[in-house]
Image (cartoon, rainbow, N blue to C red; front, side):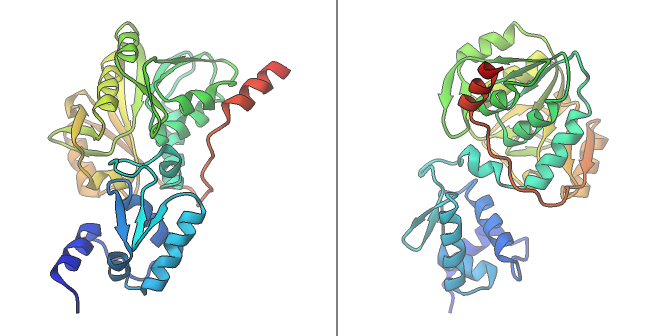
Length: 298
C-alpha cells in the first residue's frame, strides 16, 4: 500500500510522462535530469515511478555513482554539489548529448567568419564552441572557462574571456569585472543557454550572478539566440534574463513541444528545430594544461 506522501513525491518526479518500461540507460538519464533541479532522489520513489524493483533502482544508482555522476546516500542518491539547486558542468555535459550536438551544429551555421560572437557558460555553448573551431577570423567572448578552453588553440579565433569570480559548479566567471567588459563591447551574435522559458518572462536561469552576466551579454549583442534542448521547454526558473521581444531566435531539437514552438513563432521569434544525431558519447572538457603544452611544443 502506498502512502499519500509517497504518491506526492512520485508525482513530483513527472506525473505527465509514463516512466515505465524504460531501459537502464533511459532510467539513469532521467535520474540525472531530476538532479538538475533537486538535491536528492529516493530509491522508493524511483522504484514506484519506473515500475521496477528497489533492487533494480539501487543497481542504477550504483552505476551512476561508479561513473562519478552522483553520490550515494542512505535510501537514494544526491547531486554531487549537495545543498545547491544546480549540478556540476561535467554532469550536465552528459545529458541530452545528441540534441546538444545537433543544436550546436545548427547554431554554428548561423555564424559568419569575421564576426564577434558571445557564448555563455552553458553546456550547449560548449558544444557550439567545438563546432566553431573550423571558423576563421572570429572573436569569441565568453564567461565560460571550459568554453574558452575548447577554442584556446583554434587557429583564426581570438578568445576574449570576461573577468570576475569563479563559480566552480558552472566553471564560469561572474561579477562586476565581467559586466564592465561587456558594457564596452559590441558583439554581432550571442548564443545563450537557459534552464527554462516562457512567452511571458522569456529565457530564465537559476543563479543571480549567472543571470546578471547573461543580461549583459544579451545587451551587448545585435542579435540574441537561445540554444537549449527540448527538456527546457517544460521548466521554469527563478530569474529571467532575456525578454521575448529581445530574442531573435531559438535553436532547439524536435522533442520541444510543437504548440509552444508555434506560439513563439507567432510572437515573431524564429525557432529552428533539429533532429538529434545518433547517440554519441559526451565530449570530455579539454585539459587546459595540455592545450598550453601543445602550443608551446609548436
